[in-house]
Image 1 (cartoon, helix red, strand yellow):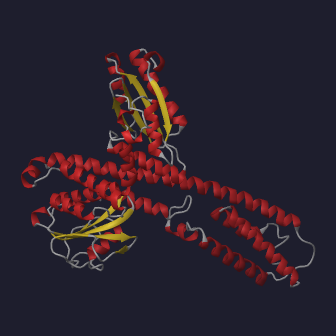
Image 2 (image 1 turned 120 degrees about the horizontal axis):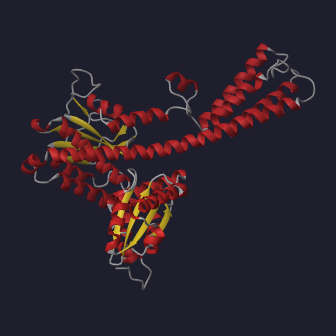
Image 3 (image 1 turned 60 degrees about the vertical axis):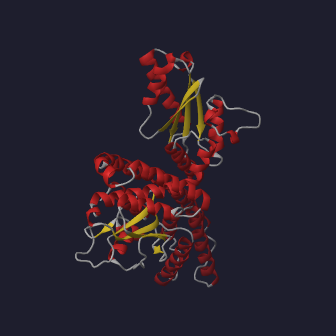
Length: 479
């Protein structure tokens, strides 16, 4: 089982849990539901509780004067689970219950002001606690989702690096294209077709042709997926046409586990009868299933674990490119010299800021084009963090090191700059001011991200990487 698939199963299990819950029985007692389900549970639970209290103690259904305010136990639990609004709703229902009991003559006497006032305050405190921790959990999940995407991409890249060295000699003889050519073709397909058509599986047919050539597929079909539903009509196919059997054991195993399914896969029933050779999921990131590749026929000598794993990596590479193709293409159109990894992660972090408000930053350190500054520039290039994405920009007069810092706010940027300056002071006896190093920062915005990056390059005086169409009329880029 690969690292990406393990992270996928862990993430999906986490999504079904409430705050601090880890077992199946805990999830049954406190499921992570909201919206209409929470309102229905509020109404049913409160009516059932007030009705039960009326049956047990018809003369005191609000359980007044019993040493503990038992009537407020259920509203507090609902407020902790769903927040302040549901908690206030339970208070209103309890107030309506008192009015009903008084009108029917079950309870006599004045309105218990202190009883309801104290209960309302208790429910508000519990609801505020639930709201705060629900928001923190949502932010943590958003950060973990981004880290899962980075982990999945890193795993695929490491695997590609390993097999590229192992197969270089054999692939040059057996296949007309190299692994680098295959990845370049997939990237081009994802960017061009997704931006042009806007479809979920944009460029499916040329992508399948590239994958079939690299993995030696003879008969295969790509089907679009929407959750657990698989479209029976293929969006792309290679070789003789065939119909999709959604009840096939390999298809069901792939949909259930979201892993590569073949006859020797773990968890597949022994001796299962299938008409397919392999079924591979098309996963965008680590958990978003957008397609299913069904392989009916391929050469026997190509049916190896390494070849099937390469098939999975190529499909994941294509899916990630399609998912972020629109934003990535916009950035590269405005900045033709921007590397693809930088543009891809910048688009991801911009979406993360737009959806959750989590901040990321770009830091630009600008050096003069002076041979005496070569050592300083090279040291800054080598000192980036493992999670950061670097983009060195060089022109005739300046050179800059743009560092994309995921999940880093202004305080993290300040700490990064202090670390870099301390390193320069310790190794070269200089600092930013003495060395004439310009420092420019940018908080990755949720909207207009490409314009903000263009303005940052213009301020850093390395805007030769900007496309001419993005410059104001009459302004020429620095060269």
